[in-house]
Image 1 (cartoon, rainbow, N blue to C red):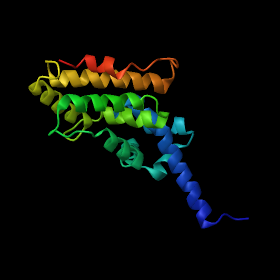
Image 2 (image 1 turned 45 degrees about the horizontal axis):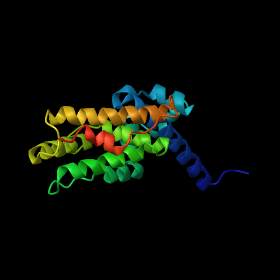
Image 3 (image 1 turned 60 degrees about the vertical axis):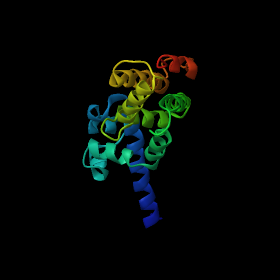
Length: 186
């Protein structure tokens, strides 16, 4: 019996989703510029022709992941910044959210890694730098370069997420929020 147009569309949607799902952990662990169509095709077990049928290059795949509802929802969940409020309490809330993410699914952790790697004026990194600077002015966050302090915080969580994602140390214990925050408290 021949397939219906709906069945064909479902097959196309499943193939495209398979490519996206295969690309996500690659972008999370290798960065935007460290992933090629070849890597994605190997992971998705598909031909280059099939990948190029849906996407013109790996950057388009990356951008499609960034436009997904999962990415947008996670970013808005982490975007806790209100610069009219005390910075230290916001930093504690952000660290709490970062710690909670370490216990989420591999998909969520992969999206979190992409969020942490993104840079730019509206990125989480730039907002954390501003928050650290505000906390230093308020006298609640340790001195030093806000950019360096932010890098330390983000690298800590990137390392934790990569460890969880790669399952190299399945029994690793996520540190307590209090211990993480002590690093930044003045």
